[in-house]
Length: 395
Image 1 (cartoon, rainbow, N blue to C red):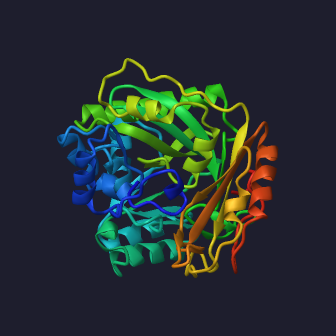
Image 2 (cartoon, rainbow, N blue to C red):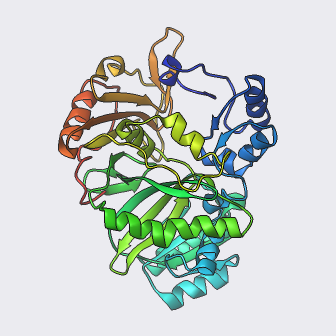
Image 3 (cartoon, rainbow, N blue to C red):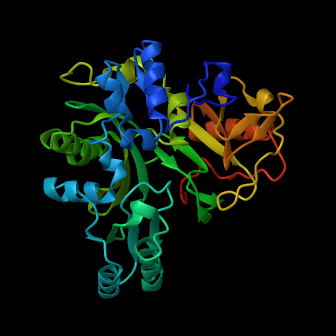
């Protein structure tokens, strides 16, 4: 694991290499003759780490830089959808603030304003008024708050309906359904407060049905895989589709080209299969007529994020964490996110989202109860978490 943290250090050898240090990551993989490298974050995928590893003959789970544009460029994704008839919100792209502002005034609100490039989850504004939309446009195109990532913006129609996180695997030729999840983005119970990187997740999504899964595969996932292959950038890895389940059917909001967090933690706990075998099959080293469906726990999983005080705007780190080692129990896991060891070996907070506490059980309600029982054993000054993970009305 590179660079790792105190949690994964209990089960993996951690290498002191940052996720942006592509030279060091390639050198380490070659030195150990790695069979498979699994790339977690979007940054190194967009920067071409998968390409560089494949050039060295290293197996990789993750898309090429060209295919990672599905997440790395909102404009690229929207244009791809338009060219290939993939259902998504109507949109326009702009590089000029005056033109974008004129369009917003003529169109009216609500609208969604997205910066084109990667912005660490902070480049999307759901504007309920024209003034909010204009401010979002100005922030990107006039103030250049997001740097190069914000020199182009997408303004798209506001969609209404429940949201779903939909995961599929692709080896560049074939694709298969993996799982669904629902994440809890806002800081407070009932879906109030600022947006975050995620305060919890559940799997499967309560609205998952075989019919809906097949509809999404047929109208969104398979056409995307075919489109990328036809345009010379076959997609290998996981397609995490953010969907809106509208009255007109499922529509694509965005793609992530990675499992995401905290959805990944819930999915891994719910999985009853050989993860390495699944990822190797989807690495694209061999062409498959079809990818097999994974085996899942018969029930549900719930993930509760424990965050630092001040998160998400100004997280305060350095707090001493107690109880994390005692909280894991049967069918319960504690994953580390923003943690570090101090000079005495004690566990300290080192980021906004600190721990992901995950449990599985026969029902969603039972899984959530089990997760919250573990959360109650852990603490640090100012710790915050949502208490309604497991309900799904207002994520």
